[in-house]
Image (cartoon, rainbow, N blue to C red; front, side, top):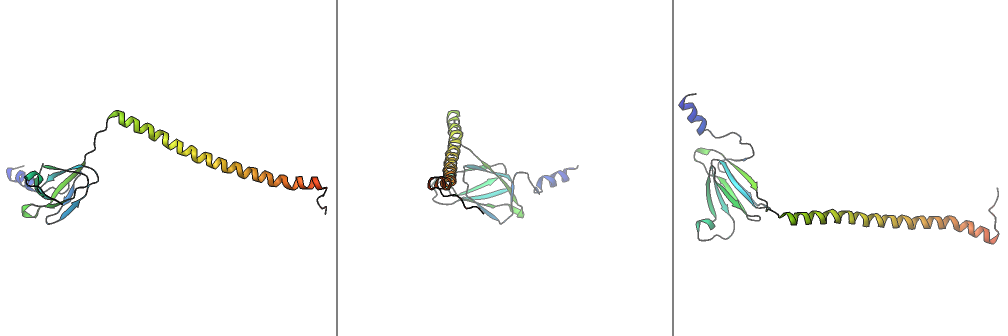
Amino acid sequence: MNATTAQNLQAAPATALPGTWKLARGRAVTLRPANDGILRVAHGRVWATFEGRHGLTPEESGDHFLEHGRSLFVRAGQQVVIESWNAGGCASYFAWDPVFVPESVGTAQRRVRLAGVAQPLSDLRLAFGLAGSAFVRLLVGIARLAAPAAHNGRHGNALPVR
């Protein structure tokens, strides 16, 4: 491979980068994350604009210009519009990595224990309700069977014979 070929390969935009989304030149996409996350630029440049009030410092401003390898933290509920911003019409590629809040071990065990008890308790409540209903239906059925026999025996009425 000569130097010119190496330069062309390095300058050529990636056709597909695993784990990323392609954002064509002139296209924009709005992100409204449900969880905190990090927007990472894998190829090219993007222009990111936060919706809402903007502060006076560059960190609080609504516009951010991110190049390859840069990232931006986005909080849950924030809205950010990103647009490909490359010279020459190249597409940009970005990745979204959710950030989960670490949970202490004690809290996690307590929640698992509660969830492990709440569901079986609910199942038992339902089972006892169904069993009680079945028991009542059984008693009613037995009473209906016993009532004609008791009535015939007391009054001396025999069943008609054919």
